[in-house]
Length: 297
Image (tube, rainbow, N blue to C red; front, side):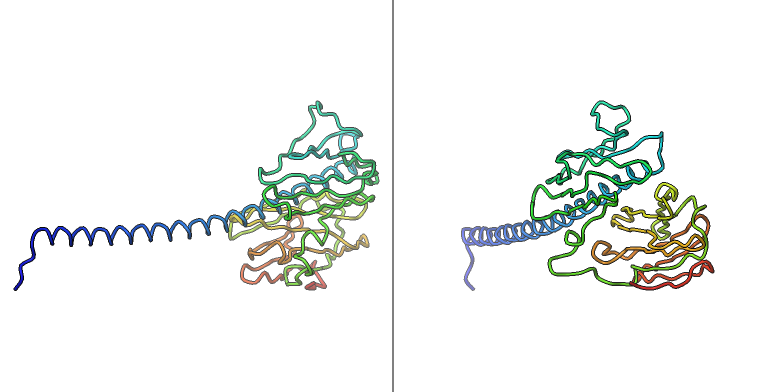
């Protein structure tokens, strides 16, 4: 049998070590590529979520300013002033940057107000007392700084109502995805005395209380907002589209364009539980004797 010299053994060991080092370097390179892909994917989803949440927050503040004006809170009008990286809820018929009553809201670092296109050319939307109308109708565009093709547009009507326009919410060439989470129902009782709406997500122990009167005017209730539930933004709009005085027709908008994760949800008006969504497929049901004509839209 041929004997292997110490020199040959040392060379063999070096080759084995060299091969192991190459494997290690290849593994590290593969892991680096995979990690980068995962990070970029997560970053993109995170920024899109921030854009969506930020836009609905702007919408909420516009609706809040209008609601305060209609309610004549502190016998005053209210408005919203827009800048590139922030917006301001203010009191009065003109914006004063030094007013102590101003409430400032910063956009997330990933977003900006890209376009302010309002009648009169200003940067404020001011609502008229009693009617809630505005002379500054137009639109506000919020977009991502890292990708200016990603944006959402809020439209403000002369009636004072604001909403995110359909073209900004839908992917190109698509319409709202009809599903069981978007429903209409009739509440068989006067809503004039309701003081509170409760959105309860029992599986995640999250509850959102909404002052009903702040969003109720002249027989019309209209609330929209975003509730963070278990790291998932739940975007909802609850509003009436008919009110006879003795009963009211409600609509709950909660469709698949921007509620991709089904969450169990219970909606109550004061102490009356009117609507329940399960956490499997988002099917809406009711057990309330005050609710009738529940229809999926």
